[in-house]
Image 1 (cartoon, rainbow, N blue to C red):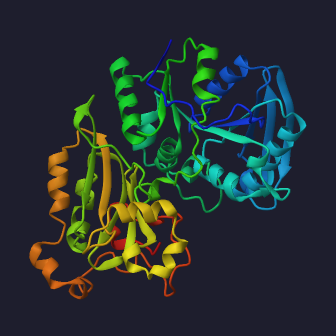
Image 2 (image 1 turned 180 degrees about the vertical axis):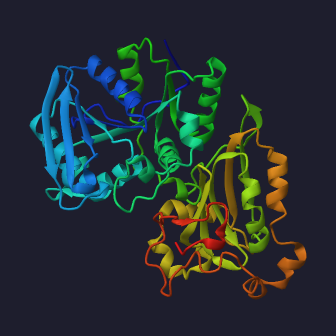
Image 3 (image 1 turned 90 degrees about the vertical axis):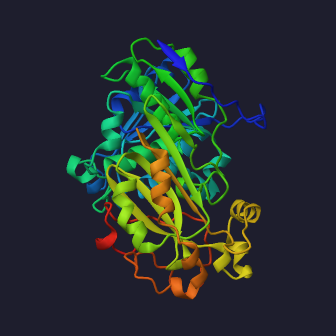
Length: 444
């Protein structure tokens, strides 16, 4: 059987005159559930084309591409790539394949099923910035929706597990150091539509709890629940295709708050044990006091994310990402208040607008914005702990030059470089993996 949460309405600005084939991007860490959704969509529409790539031999420079429809396999090829990485696969084969199919069969919509270790944001970036035969892929295809499928039986294990992709033998490249939880949360958080597939091993209550957890992790996404035993292909198709939910201008998770988008919902009341707590403040964190509580504040969290500023490094927007037991931090560039105005033109319009609407005469656009999502989190205690890390009135009165002299366990971890930035509107990889202990961190 199938049930749904309220779904986002179709884009009122979408035009019925758009004749480009529609592309639905399907991701998920558990291929059996993701492929089950793909097969269901194929069954409902004989004209739909499914494109998927097997990256099992990617490190050897080989990719297995399969194109099929409801009637069977249309293409089954192994492609040799010059470089064994996900990015080159997307550029050199995925986009050209989509463009070729769109030109050859413009009346047929496309369904792109991503390998389990590929994050949908990478696909969106390639679609936005890479050309195919000198033109954007969007000249040929309308990217309709990014759908992520999560398996109810394995979701909590995936979010809480500490295994990395290399240990499991599914790393996308030799230098792929991501953990399973990193991939799962990014697939969930970039989606505009989430499919909760199947039932939890613990029963209906636990499945409901997973639904709440997904809603807290991605409150911007529509959610569809399917028990996996009896699926109405027509209903699922109406819920997942031609929804016009994808917004290419929406930033990645690290920049959502900076650009004025929702970073998380403050839901301090427990729902099936799930709590989402948002911490916001203007004052800077004292570096040592924050360092001392990193393990404590994430002890009950399944996911925490956001950005903050340190009194000792007042020019830097510091990214915060916690998943699977590991905390990663890194530089997101300069706060606008630290930039000469002539450099503001290089910053996204949304970020400038968000900063202007929330500008403080003393702090400028600097602020703390962190979201904690987990089971049985005490939001009052969490807020008290983080507030205790902020500068006191006496410390604030000492001024910025004194703050910069504070002993700083994070010193050197978030370099901004010696030159003024040409652009501060893009996400920076947060590869300062603190594992809840930043003393051994390397610069991002």
